[in-house]
Length: 70
Image (cartoon, rainbow, N blue to C red; front, side):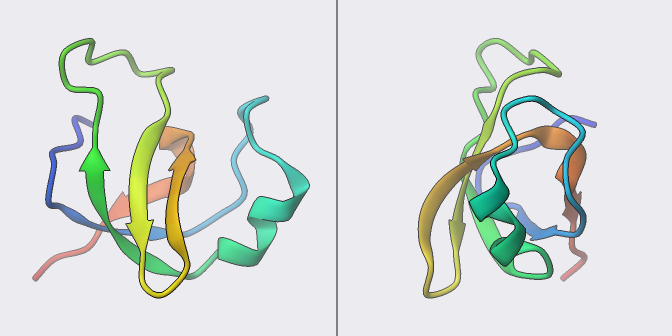
């Protein structure tokens, strides 16, 4: 899946990626907006920057994100 800036996403599960840290478990189930999809690379292993509702901006592996429909 290609992520785009401004898309609404959910952190819907724990990632299998080595970049996932234990503290990220607290963000599972939260929604946010993609602020930096790293679209210049379109690398499926690249982290995606997401601004979470009231939780700040964080970088997440792509396999834990799903796009929410408007």
